[in-house]
Length: 245
Image (tube, rainbow, N blue to C red; front, side, top):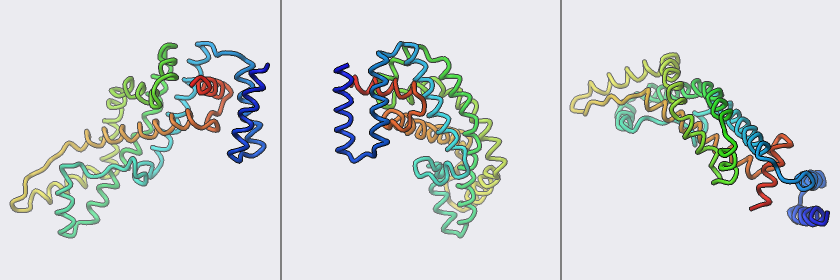
């Protein structure tokens, strides 16, 4: 009981110093007291809590990425021209093909946004297969341990699911047409070195990279921000782990 009073007093002092509201103080105290009074978490609790956190984080990330402008208007995710096409972009813009190049870049991002919808069931399948040891390793690991685990266990499945979707999406949003027009126009210019990068591979890999940027952000949010832990089990798992550090 003294331990509970000690942590409660310490939490109250810290929160008051930081200028938190009464409601925030009460919420923090209730969470801390609940963790302490209920005792240590079982390995099953930890595994279940980590799975909840991962489903929450990946769901939010995939939902954000799959929205219109989820990639295009996010500076961290926006898919730019393939490196091989940067000289193409500069050359054609200098010849007045600005709209063609703008439409093409937008279509790359629309394709990625469309494909991002495929990621959620792949993530959930990987999360469901988490072992208790996996859960402990993630909880006690680096700040991006969960993201690294998902990247390692879902990378191939995401690529295989994304690529045909990217191909279909690029055709649907006219990226393939724009690309053909661009390459055809550029390669007709005298004395230029011909280019023909693999557009499907490029957009697929960039789309997956962007998705993991969002997953990593959500992992950090859940680890660091108590308000992001939307269930009692999440609060217990991460509050107790943070107290041990």
